[in-house]
Image (cartoon, rainbow, N blue to C red):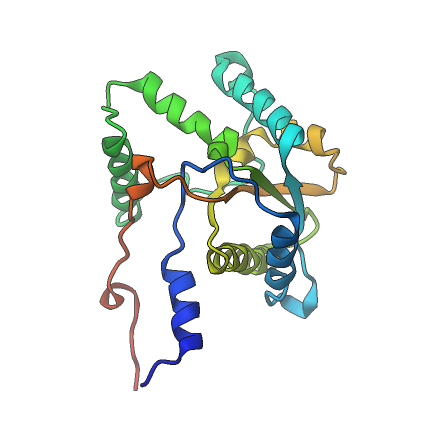
Length: 231
């Protein structure tokens, strides 16, 4: 099959997407954010329910939310009072998922020079999630509690669209389930109605090429591990 410029552009946006963990302070134009969200909303959803709601945080709004979450995260008593509103990860890890999880974690910590004994260093790195890794734009996504599993699958396609549309514009992202632990703080800051549940957060901006953590490239399993062709 002969590739077309359109195919190459789309493939490049998908394949170059990665979780960036250090951003430049360079602002992102509001028009670009709006265009990314507008095109991403073309994601399919069952019976066109369009289950996504997005909060775009910049400047002081982003800073205030980050400050309160970081303070709670570093306070052992406060941190224990905050739990996830839903289970993102399995309660019991099994192969091959446990091995993949450990590998990406230690690949990142190795780049940063963090050893297993450096618990404080690892905690500080994790806390950077709540600073949106210094990205100028923080996104928070919510969904109506009445919606079921199918709508959450639809939501994933919307999130993927955002990350790919960002790459097409030279921007980078990091999707962050870490924010869900502090959903009550988020709900207070965003004045969320009781029917809304926090899905995740996301950092958006320009990757800092000088930061070593941004050299991390995660692996993907070969097709033979997850695809069967039946004829």
